[in-house]
Image (cartoon, rainbow over all chains, first blue to last red; front, top):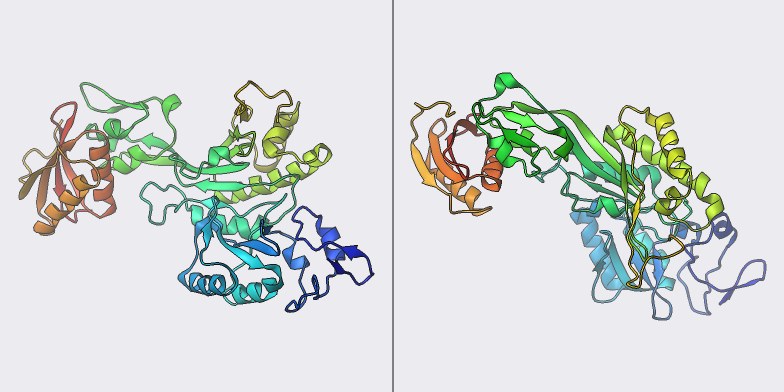
Length: 354
Length: 84
């Protein structure tokens, strides 16, 4: 407990769900709970959360901002020193790729953030806002990668991290349809995708493409060996393009597939694809538009995830209209399915559609 | 549908009993034994093996010059070292 400048008693907790305007009003002096805090606790700096109360008195887990799960060696060394000084004997890799320093006393927040700040290591977030995006290794060194998810994860963090939303808002990026990052189960999931085209002049009929295609999208003609392509079976993986020895297969389109409305939690849902082959620029516009739409449409629905909002009457159509106004309709799914809720209670379906 | 049927191989390996990653490791070891411009001929399984070998050889700058489908399950491939 502690007093504020206006004399009101306030319980000092880092409430990640507080509105930013409220947090800014709270000027908290250094003496917290009668102990010697080291400098003032900067609540404005904590507005994005990332300090998570533990079971233990006065102890917090400090979640670090690690877009795409990448951290430079330089940062890692400083984080190790900080964890040794302020945390317990271990760090924890969160399920969304953030390195967490558990068991930090909140009196040490300033010193810890200063130390991390010396290598520009920022704190992550929690609560109802845009979180740090997760991503696979991308195309830089992963042979399956179609798009550069790592640089995109950093760009998304720079542009959107911490924006307030009705509920938590998670973005994840997979560089190919293996979708190791589970973009299908994220509020906004991005996945690398290509659409292949075939050049008869370069084809030798070797049949490697049909052998490489695991989706039954390519068969080989029995006489010529040339491919017979069934686009309805293609999942845009790039295997035919990469395996073709003569470059007869090429990517006609390449970019991000966008899925929306997925989430984990007590009532998980699968997201639904709404656009394909978006450029980086188009993708960023879609993210921006989605967050703004979510803020506006979700306002009167309280704490609601994007997927549950999209399930409300007329909302999917409204969302698609917004996308059309944002990037045109050429790359949009014509009749996207709704996000699909997964029933988790063994006795049957939930009535409230949560 | 074999192309370059007259291309003579300098080294031959059969990796049809191998799966990833050994199929590619053995291919790499074989390529180490020949010079740039020489030809490695190999036999491998269809599906994942031929897909991954083809992708990885291209990534590393080798040219697949000849491909013969021996059967539904087996490919015979001729690789020109550093040919890309």
